[in-house]
Length: 161
Image 1 (cartoon, rainbow, N blue to C red):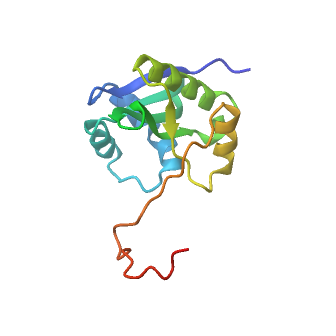
Image 2 (tube, rainbow, N blue to C red):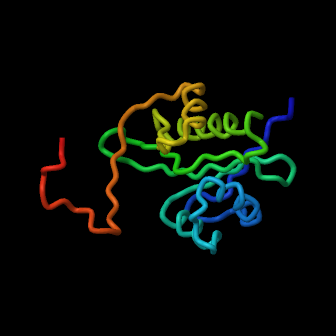
């Protein structure tokens, strides 16, 4: 079995700490988020400026997984530890990379005073759902969204039901 990956904190406290690791993480991250802007470093700096943090799982100099997360307070759970993105490189799946990142995130959440770790996963990501269930996660709520870039406001209630 391959050795455990190292977890490297790439960005924290509104600062990119390890730009070389961020650059190495880009292709892995784009596998999950192909629509990220061409200026990946600039886009991620914006996420970090808004309180996002980044960690990668790596062996030697190769990034095998990335997690983007944030910690904030809200009225429902107090200290809220939210994972924006969690992705493992395709060739590294089923090698413990996602588990290592998720375990690191759980320890980080506890250190920060959170009692839960939360994330959203697209309804089409069935393999990811299996992984999250296997790691002890459960479906805690529904997440609703509305596209605000188009005329999506209803003028009638006839379609509700």
